[in-house]
Image 1 (cartoon, rainbow, N blue to C red):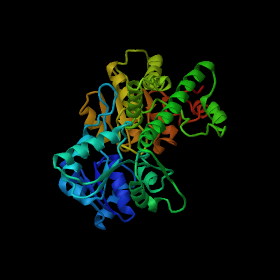
Image 2: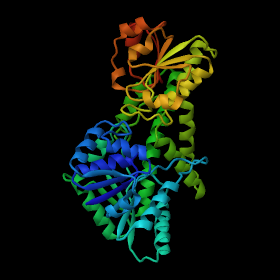
Image 3: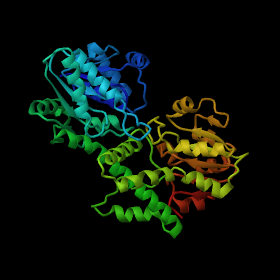
Image 4: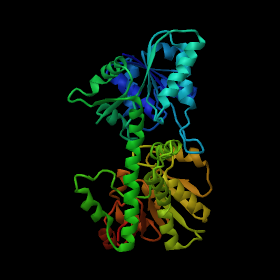
Length: 440
């Protein structure tokens, strides 16, 4: 099938590449000429395991192409995926200007039937706006061309996006006519050979499903974080509690790991957008309100522990930070807890020496040559002469370090662990002062 993907961010680039991988002829459009030049040159503008090799393989095979030519992109695909950004406005609502602009461009240049699919995470009712924009452009041309609009929300985890697309646990499509449904079934047939994964529903339900899924996961994280904070005060161990409740099949173990807050491009933005939508329709969501408040507070937990240990004046102190990205296997720093921690340390006069396996370049892009920040190439390099270590991201490389070397490198054998990577008893035996989340 001929497919056009509008937008080459995480969602667009992964989706387009994976669709090409199973044999489709895919053209990816982006108005960012620098990004397209990188892709045409064999590189990728994001960090995502396995993606670069797949891009190169499908470009070489002639199944994957990149362009800034809007008209050519519209003419190419019978299916037009809109996968552009939907950043939050100041009030928390999703900014749909790029989605609507993409729809207008399709209406302006289409010369035959198109199935236009919202792949971006968008509020309920966005398909109506896309349909109206398309129709307005066609009416302006006095054109009677037909089109359909569908919703196909993505469920891709950064760091595992390729695997999630190639082996999905579900494929949600929202349509309002059988022809569009069948086109989507045909497109996704290669991804569900061993069992049916496609769930077909109305468009508004599909739009809400994406927000509901992310809000539920964010709720579980914030609940466990607050429970961990309570466990500390009660003298309980949150890891024991996690095993105790996770063994209940109605609860399960997924997303029950306490930490120093969630970040990224999805959960914070989607929780805000869902809250905004609920407010617009007079149906406030008190649980979701609390989730956001709890997460904002949790991002300060490591800083609060450091202040409780060292005091509020941190001039002359240096802290090693392991992990800058909001989660492992990505370089994404959006809403990352590390930013709250580092900025709080700087405000109090401390210096930070940090290491992340992938996010060094992105950190430098955000902070430039910050006088209180040093970025280093190895975990051990961050420790030399530091007053303490703070672990913010649970990269695998941090899970089993040489603790003797860690102890020797630090001024004080002190670790603030925002991801509960180590066993407290073992750390005490090794001579460390170990302050984790919800553990004694």
